[in-house]
Image 1: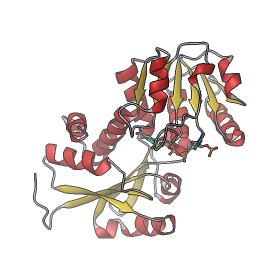
Image 2 (image 1 turned 90 degrees about the horizontal axis):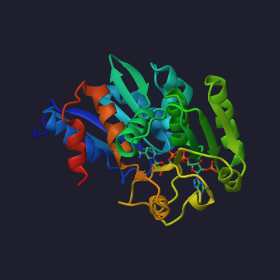
Image 3 (image 1 turned 180 degrees about the vertical axis):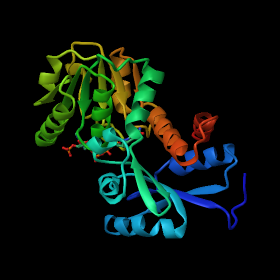
Length: 280
Ligand code: NAP
């Protein structure tokens, strides 16, 4: 571990609220493992100040930032370049690199989710029929990532129908081969067949709520919950009680962080393991 000195590089996560974030633990463990003299902090930035942070970060010597609720879309609009076409379609980023006075934005949530679906649920997304619950920022990343990876059907179920309809129609413009639809009710979801159900709402984060009752289903999909605050989330518990294969979002959290770390430093060896160890 390096002592903080005048050479120490600065990274961090900007969010509001942000004190619950596990990212400092993950990234500081990865810097130590990779023997990089850098520190990663959590910046509680109110929306009014986010633009100012983007403008001043390079002059403060900040080399990279993660961005979380509620800044992902503002970050997308505020950076100079978003190199990936998929990230431009998602319209939200969670990782920024500052280099030579320019800022570059990336979305690592989508590849992080796909990596964890493969590793925890052994799911091949190609050809899969997916029920996506939620239509917010992480649901957008999930939907575009799944469509790009070849999902054959994506049905979006959201509390606010207008938002799921907008997401489904944006997706269908970009991915005409994927069957996309916004579902009107959980009952309608019960009539369809799915290989995978994903919760991309915050339900279950701080209470026992679930955004979709899995008992409506007559099929037996694998179940993934983006929420990671409990060892077993309420959505996972329900899936387990129905005998469905399930995982929570902790693996995605590590995967998206490791991908961001790779973008900043070029280092990947031992990074995921160091991050996982930091969460124990
Ligand atoms: P967001 O942009 O605020 O979107 C929230 C979505 O959840 C919206 O579709 C919203 O519906 C719906 N929702 C909120 N409260 C609800 C309720 N009580 N009942 C039913 N639906 C509800 O949030 P986000 O950034 O997508 O994050 C969603 C969750 O994913 C959070 O728990 C976050 O921590 C988690 N996440 C995890 C990872 C990971 O690495 N594991 C990465 C990113 C996010 P309306 O449209 O009707 O408001």
